[in-house]
Length: 312
Length: 235
Image (cartoon, each protein chain N blue to C red):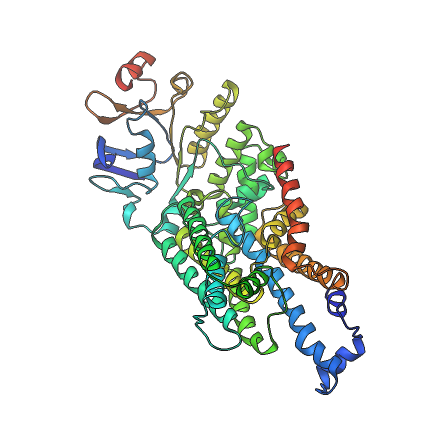
């Protein structure tokens, strides 16, 4: 899938050239530059976004004991969207660099992550926490609408395009930071497997088995905040991957063992994301489809199918 | 095993008091009381989820409130009256959760853990169900699986909230007999609440009755009270 993904695009690049670009880079060769500056970051971002969103979705589904929860359920993405809207449409950019939007949405995700984490410190029931997340989302949605109503056509278009999602916003130089946070999240994930396996029978029951439920809740939210914050900032709010993939993995593997589920979400999240993005590029010459349209076009029918299956 | 002395049980307001009661290994205790008179609150007090209004629960000479979560999970196991439905959770995996207090940070099971799960399944006679999903089980089988999880947890005390509430007559008797056998052969304190006075009085169990007249918990040896006595005192 990765090879399929990286070879698709407006220019045909062959594997030989890719090898050259990696090991004996020649900056005067346009094709090599395209590969290094566009194709490769796009592939990396696809891998990180696909796996990160799918895993975050799984964590939230288990934490809230609800198959319809997803990575955005806590409203962290709305923090990113709100600040992106601020930066694009008010002109009061928090950062004046050319990466203003990304930096602002990172800040937004960070602030909302802190808000939801501090709520999780003293809110007792997880349903309340869920509601607070949803409320945060509605609140920032409303604020975004207010900002939109005061913006001009150009700014509106720029923001709309940001919300459509794209793997191409990231540049090579951002990768050290992204990869660092990504691996911090993956590292923490190792210690959540046992608590997650226990949480499936309920928070109270898990507590009586010696699981420090509140600490686990905070770690799970922390991981989700890092992953979704990072991914939303760089790619926009990519829909459905985090909701659909963990459910698909559960149906495929028929287990509640989270080492299997996390691994499955990791692999299938990447496959789903790269396939969607490959479709975007494959159809590029015919029709300009945003990534979010593709993921939702595939994801939405799947979720409906899933609900029907549950009801049946 | 459990010492309860001069304790007020309640949540915000006092429901009843316990003057002096000790629960010993090898016995089954059945808690009887009218709705809203504090049965569930007592169970929650015993597992440390609710604090007594006055006094301390002493387990094995240690104060319950000073025990860590992990410590508690090695002394006490709890079985609710209805188990949460979970997709794709095999009976075997479910019972294995009883080993959670003993496994390492990554949750890896040792041979010993696997053996303990096997024995627990065998004790409850549900080895043949181990590869089934828990949500495919009948209510009776679910209850047996939950008790097997408590056995795998290897605690000296097992507390159950109305374990027979959703079962038919045959399963009620089966569960009660198993609980008695577990208390005696594995030398544990088994305490559960029940409204099922008829079935309970057929068994040789100690009764703990919340006396509605003077709001005290009273303890009785087996075969002492008739059904009428129990009803008069509790309801």
